Image (cartoon, rainbow, N blue to C red):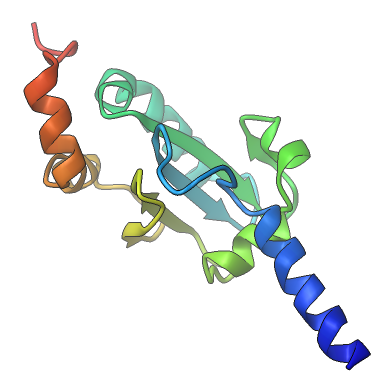
Length: 144
């Protein structure tokens, strides 16, 4: 019986510190980029997020980078979340590069490897029902 209680407590604690932790519907979508270390693929991902900043912001997409060796971007991620629990929660091999798009409903929408196809990410988000409603209600701030 005590083993069952300990097992259940360990599952709950891992889930409790997983990202995001605050409700059924979240105010943003997330792209979480997992990697073994802060390498050239991480640097490329971070550069591309800057280049796509307007498109990501207009779609309420927050990007996070989490590496097995402890690097996080933004830096506060390491202090707020159990990084090992995130690798486990999203079933990511810590020795591989894996990116995951998570919708506002908290479910995984898209998963890919080292390099990011940003048009595919934007197309996937734009096809979501919640995004369709958002597009009807506001103008695209990235259009010229």
